[in-house]
Length: 185
Image 1: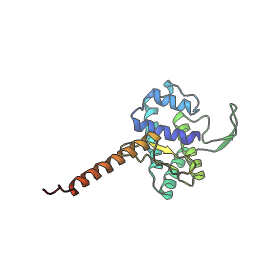
Image 2: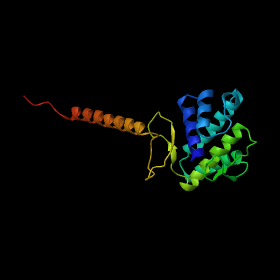
Image 3: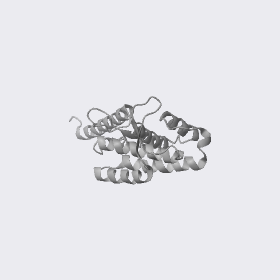
Image 4: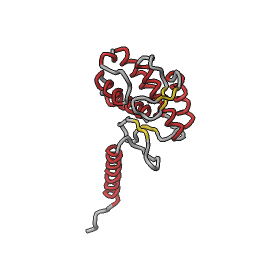
């Protein structure tokens, strides 16, 4: 899940406008990307990661299995160099999609494209999307029991529900006001 969560977090970081050297560095460190420091994130590396993030978004934006699969295959072609089973640092066996000699951008590409592909196989290319609240734009990975998630967070879901409720109430009030006639004198 590390690769798919990193993909989700990178896309949301770009969406939020918080794309800075420090924010990206913290995000990569939190996702166990090795050898990440502010010095490794020069402007060219940050630009390359942001370009990759725009490509990652296409997976979440896809509305069909065929489209999502096509986007993932493009990412896999660019991102994955080799697949290796690894055991290190007390972690259980896991897959590596890049070599230790690869640069930071290539390692992030490999981790995110490989992670998204594994998740897509397990989720039958579903359970990923863009928040349904108008204006949000954040993406999500649905690991819920029923797989029916439509919002990036409960806050967005609740905000959208309140907005829809108020619109219905406002519409009902206007229609009631027009249909009620004044009493005759």
